[in-house]
Image (cartoon, rainbow, N blue to C red):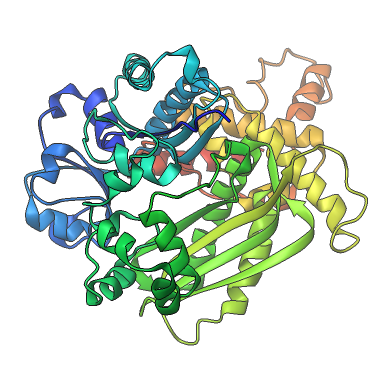
Length: 491
């Protein structure tokens, strides 16, 4: 049996590194990417920060207000997810050059199973150096690499010598490697478990490995058996390729705890749109829709619905997720966080369904899927069209495909003009030429002009929501709304 070689790769301060790459003047400065600190009054968290900022004790998931108190002179930047997604896409293309067995952990982190392809690179050190060099050449970002016989040890190894670190743990060395490390490094050891272990005098992984397995099972149940295995470096979990992800989800923490139904509904809709986009990009549909709610007292509840037919459209996911939210019940409490995820995947096909959960669902679901395809097929520069609301997609599904195409062409041209990507389009019918004497009102030219006017119908006009231009400010948003009003008026 070939030796198992698992690589864990983690880019160094990914979001902040992309910002420093794209803006050289930020290099060497403390950079914090995340929520708006609002002068120390912000409620969000730090997404990531540069190593210069970490010297002040700032770290990921820290409240942004605390980060501000520690370093008010740092450069605070909002999240630019589009830029990070582009860098991530390049990163994973590089990883695919080395092996098909790549398991994404996050946008900038992955496991690779190199057991079948190590011989192509010679030694593990040569593999790690080649991988790091390719990433730096392709992305201009640095990464740290851990190589070990199992996933957990590889992940711990990659974190020990950041940035640009390489740590290799050979077979038979895992237990000795883990022994002096804090017990909190192990998977599954959170704050409460660590406190319980500390009360038993267990502070290092070596302390945990020295305890009899039976004692740990007696005190912690099945978790105790898992902790015993991990403490001895035993972890047989396989590297699962990207298509084997168990769920796709998004969640949002509100700036202020809320019970406003409109805010909850609009936020839920945005989350569903994000989940649907990722599902469709991965070529997946899911049968189970789960809604997660965290209240102001940090009580967290989830409600899930499993369907007979899988879903991948924002409108349908929103329909189920909102029903789940109704089942949670607010009971007068304010909500701090809301999330949506889809699981129970199967490959997406374009075959028409004969039956839905109810007789009328099959047709409407397929219409919405076709509308989502039309939106997704717009050129990449028209990213705004892809963020069209679920309500809009549902409305578009009620009109003919030809009218859908005309509507999407008009609205995306209009949006791209406001965003500054193309020249101003000619909306509606062309300007009528001067009429010569004797011309009638029913001339062929005027008849053609009247027929050229798009007819979008009440459902679309009622559902048209303010779109967002990525990177645009308030004035740009106002301009966009005005321009869309002109589109509707001319129609």
